[in-house]
Each structure stands twice: as structure tokens, then as C-alpha cells.
Length: 259
Image (cartoon, rainbow, N blue to C red):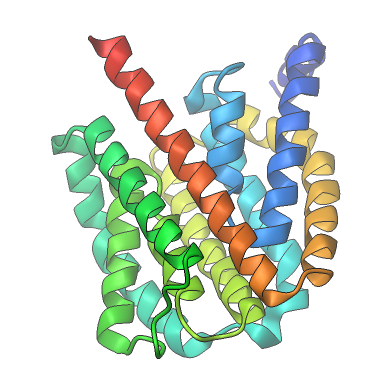
């Protein structure tokens, strides 16, 4: 079975090359900012392969990316805020799963994208919170992330906006985001395994894409170390706006295809 899967990938050299290029570019963004890998890579590779074949492999790569980055950022993680975010996430995730079954996806994705773009533009123009939110607001942010991730697979924006609108150092926000996504990706892959979505092909693709991931992560992480905090915040918000636009575009295509 495993040999057959490897042979199948070898028979698709163009798909393997193009998908690896997408992984490489998305990994640079991930290593630099701490987020964005899944949406960028899935959006690109879904033009080549069915989404159901891609997502488990991408989650495995996300976990590998986080583990690869953790040693360098461990001392910068803000555990105080993370515990409340993770608590909220666990509470919000099943509500999001319920919404996935009962709510229309595309309109909600468009609304979320517009909200993210508007908030990011405000932050680019200088809006900042005067102090780091307390337990209630942090738990609420985590719950919003869990709800959005369960419903639409896009739980990152609330947490990214949370960390980059607060007074903390950019390195602390990036480190905390990386660990938060490791936590959520582990939950996600456990859920996929329970549902039987993780297959032999998932692991073969994971191994095939791993070199592109590691090289891209290394390049992105080194780029972060050379950038000052304010320039990094602007770059993160620009990436967030780009991802929101991709999400809106994907939703609009879905609506037009269903029309």
C-alpha cells in the first residue's frame, strides 16, 4: 500500500514540484510571522489536488513547523494569556462544529474577511490597545478562534489581532501565536484521525513536502530576526490583509459556483 502511494506521487512529478513550491513559499511566511501557512498552502494546492487529500498533510506540516520553531521561542511565550486563550478555544470549538453543519459558510467567510481587513487597517493607522486584555477578554478571544476554526477552518485572525494590538513585544506575540497554533493543530489532527480522514497518503505527502517546509521555515525565521518590531507588525498586518482577501475570494468563487 505504502509503495503504491509513493509510486503514485512519483508518477505526478509536476504536481509534486508545484505543490512543494507552494509549501516552500507558505513556509517562509510561517517562519517569519508565525501564522498563515495553512491558508496559503491549501489555497494554492487545492488548484492541483482535492482539499480532502491536502488538509491532513498540511496539519501534520503545521505541527512539524511549530515543533521546529519552539526551541528558539520558548522563553518568549506569554503563558499567562495563552492559558485563557486555549481555554476559550476548547469551549468555542464544538460550537463552531455545530455551526459548520447548520450555517452557510461563504457569507460568514466574507464577513470575517471584511472585519479582519478593517481591523488591520485601523492597526496600520496606529490603533493599539492601551493594556493587555484580562482573563475574560482573552478567553473570549480564544472562544472566537475556536468557533471560527470549528465552523470555517480559519481560527487564526482573532488571536493574531489580539497579540498585535496589545503593548507586548512583537517577539512575544509571535512566540505565543506559534505555540497556540501547535496546540490547535494537535487537536485538529486528533479530530481528523478520529474521523478517519488521516490516511497513508497523508503521511506520504507530509514526508514529500517536508524538505520544502524546513527550508522555508529557516529562511522566514532568519528574516524575522533581522527586522525591527514596528516593521514586523506592519508586515504581519499586511499578510493578514492578504489572507483575508484570499478568504473572501474563495468564498465569492464558492457563491458564484453554486449560483
